[in-house]
Image (tube, rainbow, N blue to C red; front, side, top):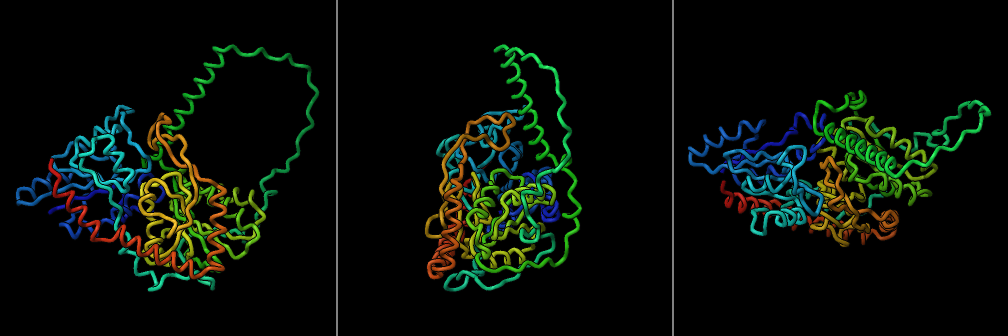
Length: 471
């Protein structure tokens, strides 16, 4: 079998693409590659224009050929001769079923009816496709085979909480809260203000008519829609991206970070609103205001330091004073540096409103690191109380992430902040006073992720889907 694959973000462009739209699909391809290579010969194409010529060449040689488009459905080509399968991650319980902006591909029924099948990264997403296309549509729910990549980090009996000092290094930049001199007073501008001049009484303006109020409301709504459309377009087109800050382009070599106590870690793009990282930071600082040996590491996956630096410093200043430690890491981690980050961490933290898969959470769990996270969307497939402290959440109205009108026709999950804050404290107490319970949770995470995302399971499911795909 010949498997043609394409992802618009490649190994050569990933460092400059961190935080941009669909950058995580590169990591999805990277993790699926070992499974694909067990099924057939994998050929990476740099352009969709290469697919049909390669399809004709290998088909004439007697080979079965599949094109695997690793991208959202609306970006998957529908006019190829080669049988096409879309591999995608989606964080909503339903799928777009109408076209907008004169693009029929925004209606996913249009896409799925013109390709050979689909691979969703969660059971919720796969069921959303079946609800749209019918129960017999060729779609499977399949996680990335993460466990083999990280299982060897896990000690034989499971991790114990790491209380001793440990060191992590990277090439990039570190923002470390104890070194910042944080104070809310620094946010206030002490400026001379002129004394207000006495003015003549002004007659009160007449109450606007109902028609005038409606007109103003309509104008404000249209302006908000224009701003949202411009933001979506700016994310979707690379040429509209702002120039990266020079700090992101000129990393500092061998930045050293010394850690002790209980260490929490979370990874996300700071411009992705779904990740809800404000709650991650505020709940942590509130839980450990008087706890100097609690540390939160924020691994920012974005190419531009200025996309979040001022916001983070402002938030920390408003939370000050606190004795716990918040550290933001800016810089690309190679494979070994990432594995070292997992080693020095005690708990992985997630507080998102929806997940299509959450690769970092799966990777830390596969290494035997317990989590503090909600149980919804893709995390329903693998998260439970045996391997994580589960954060409460509830549904609220939401719009699909790429809908320019922002129509509230779907749902997302609002995190219970109090539950997140108490979860931090529960994890800390477990690490400090119940190391055996922590070790048991660690080993359970490792074994359950093996069942969920080991390579043979993924290979078998892929092979069955590909064998049944006909144009």
